[in-house]
Length: 131
Image (cartoon, rainbow, N blue to C red):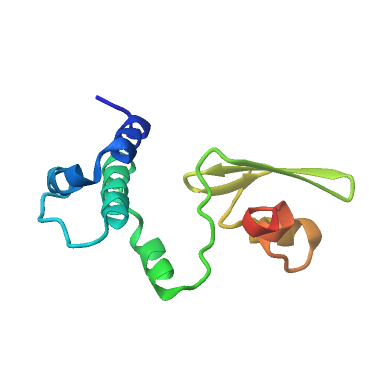
């Protein structure tokens, strides 16, 4: 079985005339009457959805609303920050954020614990737009 990268490379090289049949194969429905580029993008989206799963309902709603979306942090991620000569080393687990043997529900909670004042956790650790 081909990897998603290989499948997408094949899709990019597929002639426009073959896209409706590919849509039917991947999406199991009649292809919409749209430009070939949009059809290709729709097929690519569905291929990726099959390979790595659907977008979460929360993320889907946030994108539909046009609101800013906070980055999801993968389990196993490690954040390291120096603060006033002290190294802050945080590990992301399935249950939350682990720092100095204690679990926290957010980076902001850890930033508050470290600094003693309210901080944006992503900003404190340089995550996303703040990094």
